[in-house]
Image (tube, rainbow, N blue to C red):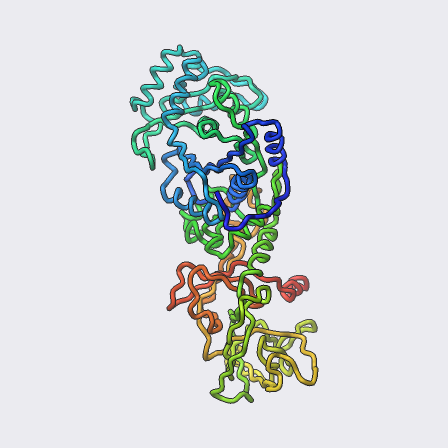
Length: 566
């Protein structure tokens, strides 16, 4: 496996690496490191999965080992080839390539034989109780479970029933296969857990060959064992499942990987439940799995996030044993830091107001030299047309500005980026509505490049676009999908969709962009100066450009307004 760019030459240590280091010193697993990333193909991967991908593939890279991509495809009613394909695309996008590609369904016959061996040993039985009866007989955290009427079925009868289950003789829900462990165990996962259920459904790979399917806990450890994984790294909710993982392998005396758990990623303002993300898609609350507001890797990729930023973010938050909530600003800062290095600067006006330079010669056009990226001298320069009529941001003008507003106002002088100093002389308004239609200004022809020869100081620099040369585009301004920070705290019985942010998407139909963006292609990234980082959407065409806002820039004036309540 490989990355286009190693996340770090010397990544910081963590408790998982300390375990692996100790294993290598002791000679455990013959000093091999073999990890795996085992998603279920029942939806699109989200940012939380990125942490697991970077961890598993990153460990294999660090130790010169291997990492498998394995699809946990044991639930045919929820899985689809679409998800299989999208997951592979996501892993590659993050910069990784698996050493082996496997499916849990590759092992259906082997796992079935393991179930037969458990029955033969008296460690599994066919239970014919209903789902509700089984649930009630498992007991509670303070009360032991009680044995059902089928727990002591003879081995031969269990073998016969299980084989007939496989042969398709029984409808769904008639029987299940359960492990026979300990109904009084303090860990509920050890109280005769379900191993197989009947499900007459077509599987995306095996078709109708099987009508019984193993459950995740039964499949997971055996898949790791078959693949000779050394360190089976799971999220923290599987810590209570580890005793069952160990028991299932040990009772059959199989090769035994080591399961290690780490805290999953939780981000403010983001929903990480695939079930609820699917509901957002199905109800039309978002445009699809790759809606740029979604936390899916497909969504953030479309929004303009980079794999380098995602890897840097995952490295920064680290790996711990304690669940916590990470502020989304940590992720956004990682994206800003990466895009700052790689994005060319351009000028775009999202909410335009026209400026007419009354003393600029009509019909004259100048080509001003602008630096593409001050962080990357190799990016060079470009020529930006300057003319008598310009567009500036409406927010960059105030007719009666407060004390700390230093942008354009009547009688005030500002600097145009790469251009001239201009002064607002008058305001043209709609006689009926009073709306400002255009600003009449003058320019100082001696200030080309933005500096006055007499040394006078100008406090503000604003961006602009030449009106005759402007390229029109639809600009989509994305914000947090949820208004509240801790989405996970919403009670299950409450309508969680009421917390969706109604301003998570604002569409600007006719923004004005500088000429250099006329040939922008889907996936191109840039910084709209003073506005944020943007990416050309996949639906963009030469006839209709569409830009998505990836992340904003810091805006001191906006912060001041919020602080003052204005």
